[in-house]
Length: 500
Image 1: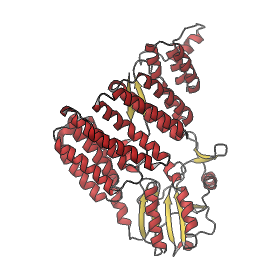
Image 2: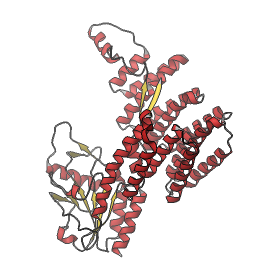
Image 3: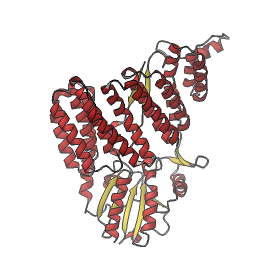
Image 4: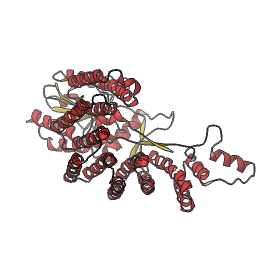
């Protein structure tokens, strides 16, 4: 039985967002063989023939999962585990992942976390070091993600602490196993401290383990593994909210020196490439030329050694994707100081007295967004704040969106995409936008562009949220893509500069 974690790596580096996990189990108890009918199909066939067929708990659970009855599957699994022997229990535990994923796909994050928590606690009981560490740490990462979504901060913290304590107990007599376990677990604990608003605790935890790593005595053959473990802790420090150019440089210098001391080590080269790729991802929007230069250097360093290494090959594909983002960033830089492209308007929503004429002479923040865009929604508090703060200074926000075939669900209080081939009329979608804006307490005017509009392209939009700041003379002075506090701080600073 093998647990695998698949990350959306490039998106995570670019957006600074927590990666979303998809966990899969490979093994005979995870899914029916392609050579035989599923448990649900077997049961239905037997029922149709008037036969009674006794099913194993695994078959029953699998059938319930296939029918997307995840609640009943979870209850049946708990009952089966209560009476199973250890060998059966191990196979049954693996089915918990399918239930976790099922709840998560339905956005039932509380239920997904509850099942993930049970899985983690079961894996803790059998944790014995390297042979089971990947399963445990991957399950914990997923549980933390869903627990955070569900608002279960205290339970997530307790779960991480339980795993940390167990890992320390199991690996205390083996320095390199200890370092590797802490390199995986401490960053999760750090992220949790940050989520709770305790940045000081996060920093202290990192410094404590970084200092401890410096005192570990390991064999020469384990030196590379220790350096990789320390790199992972330094990378975690570089992801803290207060990280800056200095922390990035410290990380870059450390991993560079580590590679220089072990130039023939493919694992060290891989860790260097992974770390450098992450650092490049943080600058490619604002420093695209520097980012391209560093990608070129990294490619030259890796050379043909990527041919036999899956991670290096994967990073090569990431670099190609980065270069597309770099091309987009260069296009955005070309917009700075140039007259803003014309607005293309099919309709106004929330317009009030707003016209293109009324915007002349004002500083205008043009916000490209969509009702389905989570990062866009994350920027709304800043938009409300800025409009209130600068309302008397000749400032206006203009949202820009498209028709996406969404309608408003009053009960769920959210915009929902129309089913199948059903088409939402333009008039109804504009009503959806009104309801959406009112729900989020947004009062600024919004432009809905025509279906054949080139306005988004003219502003260089390749991802949203995308903000362009236009000065009083009608020239673009700043373009920012994505959400996050650092992006918001940059926009606010430029607003103050343009308005005062």
